[in-house]
Length: 492
Image 1 (tube, rainbow, N blue to C red):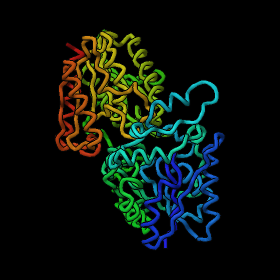
Image 2 (image 1 turned 135 degrees about the vertical axis):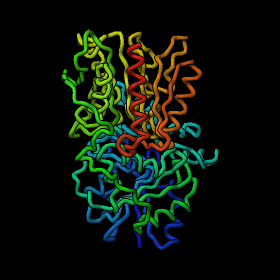
Image 3 (image 1 turned 90 degrees about the horizontal axis):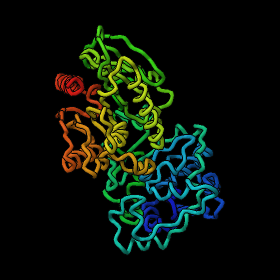
Image 4 (image 1 turned 90 degrees about the vertical axis):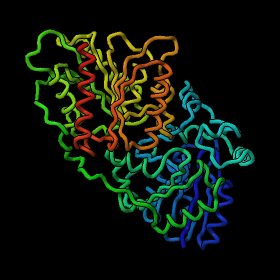
């Protein structure tokens, strides 16, 4: 018999689970929905205490903790304090917070960030009205009546619950977990598997055999849109079912070699910037600045500019007679985009100031999650930016990345005042994750409307990160074509 402790997301309380507890109990389980403290001074730690108190009140050896949305933070905090009592943690359409993270980082509503960023002590975050819930997640499956019900059950959220960092000791690291994804929000199991394969190394833990995944074809509030289906999935999750992810083939501790043989050329380091210089080249040369993706861990070794991947790209560019430069920026989390943008801008200035570089002939080349950093350069392109290159880029923030704000939307950045944006060389992976591919298609459409020239290089059988995962002839030809095209535009 499974014992569920059900904790809901912001603004809501135990009543939101009313239609789920019955089916759980009919299936032979026990269900205890939780109402978290709503007093103005409550913080995340208060809510951790609330969940711990419920665990301690039950005369059961083990419980299944279910955290929806924000509630995964207090659920993880409680599991960390009661690891021996926690049989499983279920992430219900929730993020993957780590020690030190705040819930605010995953809040998708920019208005909340503005409210909590004001000077002084912010007040409670007002509960959404019926037409405002879509700013917090997909409302697919909720009728107008259900949205009114959701608002009637809602109360303001204490601000410190969103700004107080989660503190974890690692005591519950061994506890099995399940993820339930509500796919109307755009995230599927395939999307998660792509992120495990290509994203930060800490995500590789999601391919652990103790982690199972489920999908519900609904919006962000399945306890109201499909309570029976949710109850059935919770029962299966408690039994250890669920799809397992395939671990990445390569060992990230030993990065694979670049897919092309390129000569090792002179390298110069200047702060966060590395320059790879063509041999025996006379006079200031055009340059391409490669901007890595992310987020990447702070302690990643080797760092992006020392990886075979970016060494290979930069050396290939230098072998074609242009300076190949790599800037190592500090995009360590989704709240770091502004800092990373500053790092890239600083790298550009260092590059243009170098006497070996022609400051009027520069290309910027963005990869993967670094693609969002292209927005500034599309919106206000300087004359010296001769070409902007993008390889399997994110061109809008992904679902749940609301903390990024409105600035980093390349698909919306084309100027509306008649200014000519820079020409774009876009390399697309034919087997890209659908959520990322959708942002690319929006960008291509927006570019056409803005009359921005876009040259597309397709890799039909390539996945995200095809240079590593599909290092065959098709990928080699695509990389050569892209680098040659950018170099030719710089030399023109």
